[in-house]
Length: 113
Image: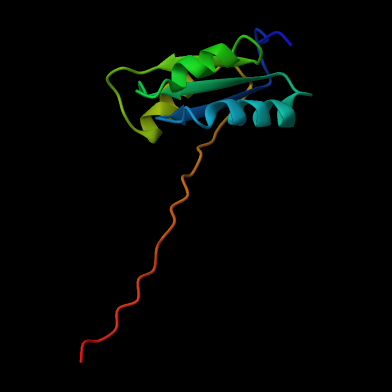
């Protein structure tokens, strides 16, 4: 499979990332499985992750319709999404984030006697 981003894709999907190196390949593959019948581009807007997220996404871009933008001096989901919209070439735009799941440990304390 060779990456092919149409000159004017139907859909631009913006995904802001920071330290998603363990998840980015799976995300790209799942997006492609869902959208492979459409003309789309996946724009990864990475806030200069130290874990190599952008490098992994760039490697995936050789096989999937992915563009990677690295922001060196900016942080935050909202500004990353806006930045991605400014890069978008699609007729339709949308965005998504991976919500981290936090496990809350419950501790029971008993009253002291």
